[in-house]
Length: 155
Length: 155
Image (tube, rainbow over all chains, first blue to last red; front, side, top):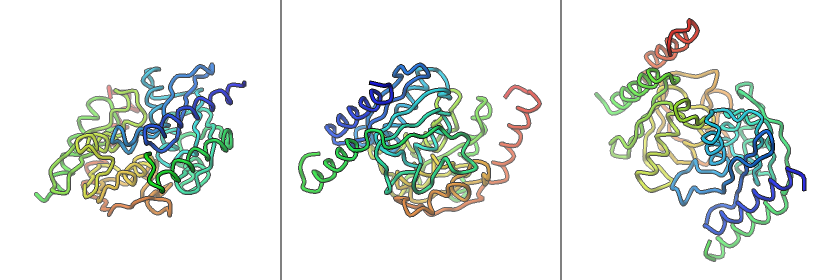
C-alpha cells in the first residue's frame, strides 16, 4: 500500500475511534518528510472541552512538539475531512508541505469552500493539496454519526 | 476605567511581556459575562514551538478549560491586534460574544482583511466587533519589536 493510502487508512481509524468517544468522526495523521508517522489523532473537542481540538490541530501541535519546531517543513498531513478555516490557517502557519484530505465539507470547509484560506494573498504558505482520498469511507462515518445523533442513539 | 479599557490595558501588558520573551508582541484577555478576567496570555509560539500558540488561542483554550465547556457564551475577548484567520475561526467556534481589538493587521488579519472569517455564510457565529481600542500603543509595540529585529538588537 502506498504511503498516502496507508496514512489515510490510519486517519480513518482515528475517525472511527473519535466516533466511539462521541466526537465528530474526523481523524488526522502527520507524517515527516521520510513518511514516518509523527502524530495521529481524532477530534477531541468534547472530551477536552476545547473548541480548537480538531484532529488537524492536535497532530500539528504534537508534531511540532516532537520536532521542537514551529515549522513542519517537508511534512504531510492526512485528514479524513476538508479542514476548516482555523485548521487551514494553522496548516499554512506550520508550513505543512502536502495536504491530503478525504471528504469535501461544503458546510464548514475552509480549503475548497468558504474562506478558501490558501487562495488568499495573505496566506504565508500553501501546501500541495490532494483531495478525495478515502472520501467515501470518511463520508460514511460522518453520515452514520449524525444519523445516529438524530435518532437519539448513544453517540 | 471602564471594563474595555482596563481589559485592553491588561492585554497590552501581555503584549509587552511577550516582546520581552522574544515573541511577536500580541496580548489577549478573555473576560466572562460578568467582566471578570478568565484568562490572559501573550503569544508563545516560539517558546512552545507551537504555531497555534497565538495569544487569542491560548486564552480561548484556558477559558474553556476553566469553564469546562467548548463554548464561551457571553464572554468578551480583548486582543491588541486584529486576529488572524485561525484565531477568528476559533473565536467563531467558541461562540465568543464580543471581540475588541486594537491595531488593524492588513498583512495577516482575518477579520477586516483577507479571509474575513465572520462575513462568511459558513461562520457558525459572529461576535460583536469593536476595533481600534488601544490601537496606537499596540502598533507602537509591534513596530518597535520588528525595528529592533531588523537592526539586530536582542529581541
